[in-house]
Length: 142
Image (cartoon, rainbow, N blue to C red; front, side):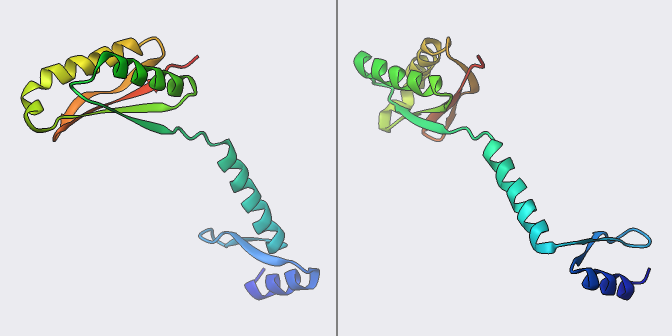
């Protein structure tokens, strides 16, 4: 059927002509109510977006000279976030002469990871980038 015949037939029945496979020989088209078709497509896209799981990454900043109570407070906050299913990004900033004592920072970072090892797995190992050492903790699957 020619393009014009198909358009005339669709117009007579009150439909639009939608090209399904334009590269096929001959091109494949179908008659649809285009407004309804677009509405259904938007509805499907919105439903798929609802079912999509998004993970939130919560930032947490440590210091190489952190005190024990501050350390416990930070671990408690990270524990709450991990229980909620959120990822935790732990940053440790080295300032000034602290850069010469990176092993102290790494020790504190590893201790932090060890305390939370029952709830989390290390997604990204502690790594120094510039003057910030960072790692990412992901909640364990239940």
